Amino acid sequence: MMIKGKDGAQNAFLESMAKAAKAVSDSLDGGKKVVYVNVMNNLSVDCDCDGYAAKPKMKDIGILASTDPVALDQACVDLVYKQKNGGGASLVKRIESRNGILTLKHAEEIGLGNRSYKLVSIDDK
Image (cartoon, rainbow, N blue to C red; front, side):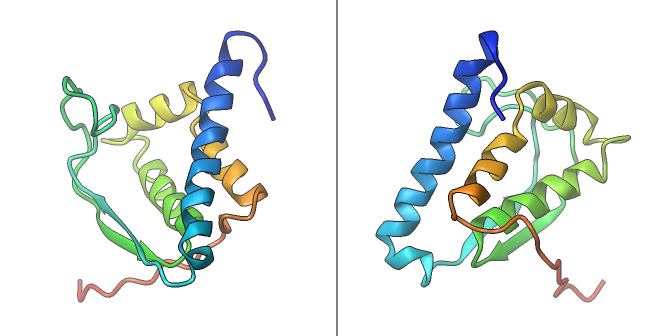
């Protein structure tokens, strides 16, 4: 699913991120011995690498981990979407305006992982 016109370069970039992640995973014994960890705190619409990132708009959600990087990222996106009528609204808008889900879709298509998951809480709350 490629968006034509000016977004074609964006889609190519998003797909290349999935391919790069797969290359790293493949170089690590197919990712069989890797645990991926995402820390969901101080969420902003901008990348952590941006020196002038927008201030965080979303409360801390927590720490997620998985042996499947695609399932992990899908779970994180889903948790943001659950707050789209609150603090997550600006982040959801940014994801959608940049076709951000394409990276996850492409990662699944090329065999990096699976977008299906089961979220298990280990917190006592």
